[in-house]
Figure (cartoon, rainbow, N blue to C red):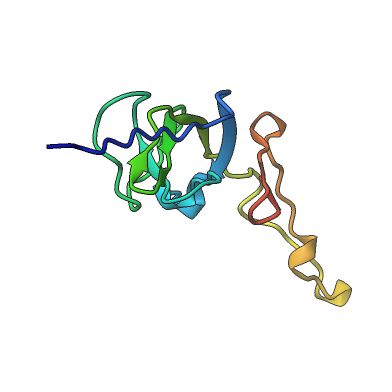
Length: 129
């Protein structure tokens, strides 16, 4: 009896940890993670474990790991993505602001101050917090 054994190995070439920033207001999940390849699966560890469901919420400060499956063979190396889920503080200002009606005030006349130490730019939406 003869057997044909095929050993395949799909290699993730970029082994550096790639940073990715998400905004908490967008409720990011595993489905928002991006890796280039075929049939990508995401894991919470560098080895072992079960693949994460696409609706799993991302956690700030966590590294997620991707594999790809080609011709039925899942890669044995994993691509790491370090996730930041930014949650900037609300702006401050006076809750009561007075305007003269003769000046035709608009929303643009309202004054709020943002905390410079907590500014975060969300590339996906273009918003600056």
